[in-house]
Length: 423
Image (cartoon, rainbow, N blue to C red; front, side, top):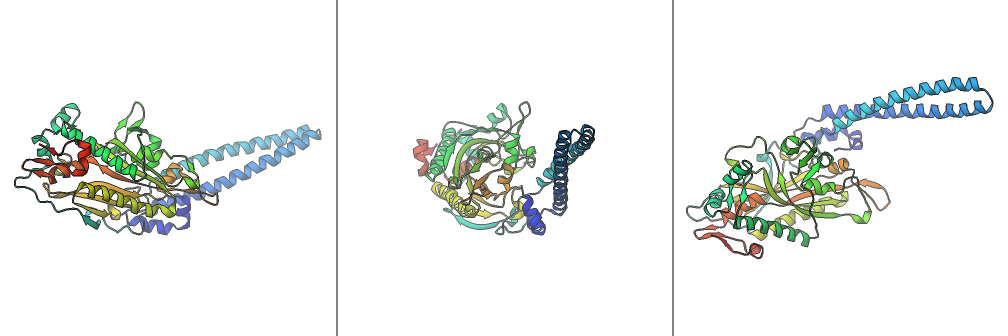
């Protein structure tokens, strides 16, 4: 959530920057400023009424001491009227503040100056490519056919048990999943990230804190009886660990990693791009989250991008890194780098990680702050990234490493799988 201070100080900059996200902010910004002016005027009026009440209370005390009971009773009537006005004023202020909050959450985060303009994926900027070229054997298969051939992922059984988008991993497929999760967590913890195992259902306050609510409720699975949401990413519970927290200066940065299953409705997804593991309703992902001082957050972002790149390189996969344009960024992000793997059998790029800096946007919603060296309380910056989302990593691993005799497991994973080939 954008701060009122930012909107008051330079509303035209906010409007211009949000245009990079193809968002017309002027009507909302103007309404917010109007409501903010009302809020301050109502507060001034309320303070004045309170001061009058205190003054008249002192007068009542003096009159009672002087034995002037009738006069004191008249002043008490005046105080009662002031209290009635105060009560009415508080009700108006409460309605005004609710409307102010409702308008503020309509504004997405401001993109940083590095974000290129653009309307969609076609305008994203490729900043780096790496990994080996992939040469497939004759008759190479896409991963969903490989999964059936080697009986390692059963999509039809998932439909029977639940529905489309809920695959069942079997045998070496299940072991490969577990191996990747453990490998990712080990790499992250060696890099200084503290492992946590959070709940996979969260309350509405947690969804609001990281910006999933009220923006993305249609994409989340909702447990109505308990008013809970299944997590779309570990970012939500892990970042909310710090909700309503004031960190001490020496407690920054905070670096966390977590594995969770993730649940997304993916409403409106259809066609060839959702086949196999390309788009699921339940999938496994390992996440990294950081809480930083503002002056350190962009160095931290660079570290996170380099860290994710090192994991992809260790797996020996062809990849590219994109800096997303304004039109393809999330509602909450100030800047995002996407990692994509080349799926040789499908002839397309598959997104496997987003690494983002949210600056103060999430922290403002979370009331996540730190006390600086001078003792002043400041908003933190929050960052997160996938390291990594498993389905499309598995898809690329299966397709790019297929041979006539089976699928070769990358050497780095063999201590985790206990086998070097799926056959």
